[in-house]
Amino acid sequence: ILLLIRNPKDVATSFYHFCNGLPTLPSYETWDDFFTDFMTKKMAWGCYFEYLSEWNKYADKENIMTITYEEVKENPVLSVKNIATFFRIPLTEEQLQLVVERSSFQSMKKN
Image: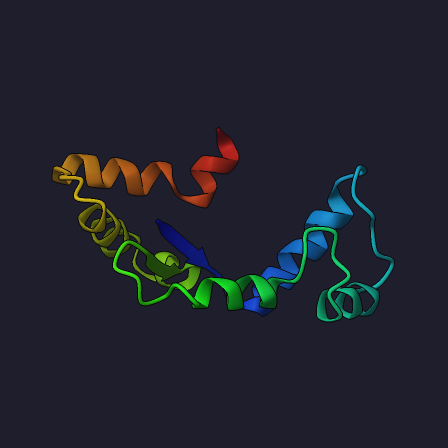
């Protein structure tokens, strides 16, 4: 299992823009309104902090790899190498570069 986690501040910011960008989700007039709901467990998809707390129970299991979004963003090549090693997937240098390229935000947004 690969658990990718993200800084809660960045999660909140992304969710705020996501909610306000989709007409099918409740939108928020102000950041303060959204942040209050985010911090008081009133989000439709649950509480991010409880989500992290639940996963933290399994952090030491050998079949779970935890990595942060920030780590991946800072060094995508090393992150992909570590993930491939964890799952015992051999990658050539060409395959590694292709995975890094295709999993970039810009590439996924375009495709």
